[in-house]
Length: 420
Ligand code: PLP
Image 1 (cartoon, protein in one colour):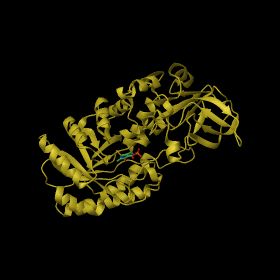
Image 2 (cartoon, helix red, strand yellow):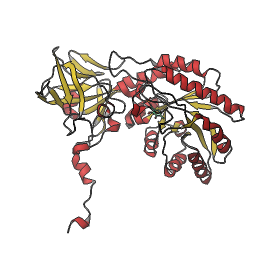
Image 3 (spheres, protein in one colour):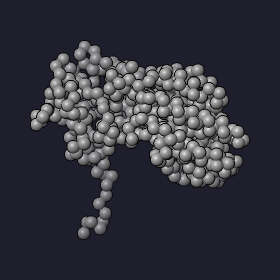
Image 4 (cartoon, protein in one colour):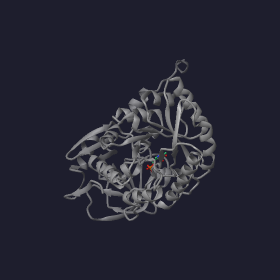
């Protein structure tokens, strides 16, 4: 459930009519609903209520806006981060350093040092060498880093290839069979406390079967490692739960996921850790856009909107679907293609879509744009960096400013040697 609803024929975010935001902030603009974020956080927590020991770390990569993180921090969420920049964001948003989990396949020594200096609670290791490097850095700082080893369970998550992470050919984690040797060599090393396993098989998952299979393999490995004398007190199960980009395609609910987790992890006796991203923020955001032209096409009209692939990359990157709706629908429909102004044929949001009839100047939204939306935006074609707004009841505020091309140009320099 979200809080983007029509009132008197006009689409609102909570109690704010979207035309008001368009008028005051301009378009394109991302709009987040605080009430929706809070509701999603609550639903996820409720789904895991029966688990005795748990830790929820929001996967910041899905939406790193500081205001969004602040809302989730107030709900008691920690953060799953994949870069030094994300560590800084989590801290800036008021998340407790000990609640931050540092994932990521290519942490640099500098990032590890920085994370240790702020007191990050856990590092999810991607390879043995990284563990020894982390241990060495921690010793030099007089610290001990808590860590888990990310294992790759070699299961097909059944999602888009570009967001699938748990097959053996993917770059993530170590083959699960290698875990024993790594624990033997790394466990007991000064500077590191290797305390468990982590795993994340992919994103936008609609089928819990592969997740349950992966968790089964992780559970068996926990028993094996304990049998070999290692102390395992935590397992990080990652994120991955899908969201309904298309209204009639509904993923398993957090509650159903929670039941599966209870079943799959019974008897593990560890702190279970979770890294949800998309399921928390996806439906809490929309991208508001204005129709520039309705261009007659050879086959059907092209609705040219002022949002483009640089603002919302998912359709171009993953052939992803985002529902499009008029902000003030007339009740009439049309079949059209929807595209942005960027000079790429890939800058297309939809082809042959049955949508609300729109004309130039009308406002529309792409739904379910709160995850992997603004954070992937670029300034390609020298377009402005898209702004973000948060709504809270009848109030709204700009939570990330539009960065104009002039500002970006001002950060570029023509060297002296070109001035002769
Ligand atoms: N954890 C890790 C290690 C990830 O790589 C990702 C995303 O790919 C997530 C958590 C969040 O996944 P999702 O947004 O699908 O919940």
